Length: 37
Image 1 (cartoon, rainbow, N blue to C red):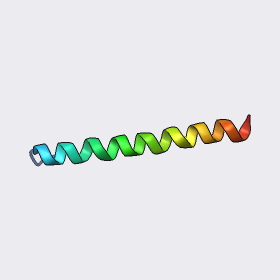
Image 2: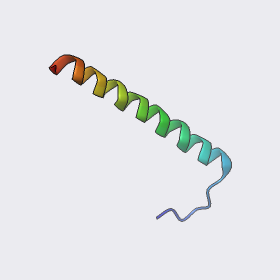
Image 3: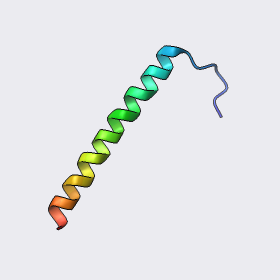
Image 4: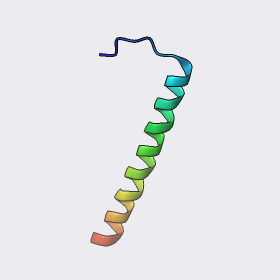
């Protein structure tokens, strides 16, 4: 799907963004459990 070659800085950026999104999702899930249970 990606046509350009992945450089190390792009890879690092991708991993940092994905980890940030994962942490946000995790907090949201914990919050939902805390609120709805």
